[in-house]
Image (tube, rainbow, N blue to C red):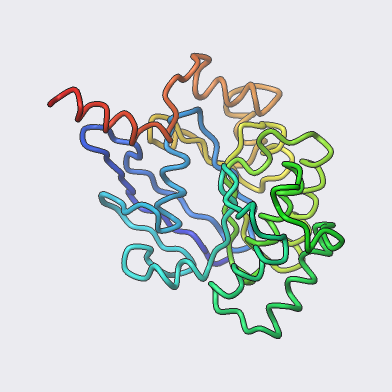
Length: 264
């Protein structure tokens, strides 16, 4: 099976901080791939490099055969993304958020309107299409974000903590929908999560990153067998330790700026 994501010796440094430290792995087309790690391990930084939001310090990335550094537009057309924090426009309606996304990606109007109708129906927001997003619950916003991320028929969907803070019913609904789209349209799913049961139940394979390095890779069963544990959570703790991580990956820029101020 063809690899849709290929990573070789990928490094990202912020001044004297190495956030991603020479990682290499691949993801097959149509695979559901979990990317796990403690806070500050390098997960979000890696996803930002995959999605053209950050430039690598060194190493190689291919997304659907394209290099994010040299072919960013081709890479962007290849994926949809659900960020950890909501990125919807609360002052627009559900329809308007999807319409804006479709126009941005150059989806022809006739196809765009048909796809919007299909997606709103699939995520059970058809009756709320003309309601302002600021009136939506967290779960409704997440469903709309997934509809938006899949609107332009991407090859890959990146999900950074997609079900954070959602109730079990909504989490179950969202994953059922994502798996259905994976099977129906062959979309590759690349996701990070702190819900270990989610990764255990949903993923075909898992990579565990810690301190910027890939420390384990395989199926959930492989990781449990390797660590001689019964649950993926226990396997994860065995691999990464039980110490609480105080510094998240998203704080690296803040830490860098603070250090610059201290040096002045």
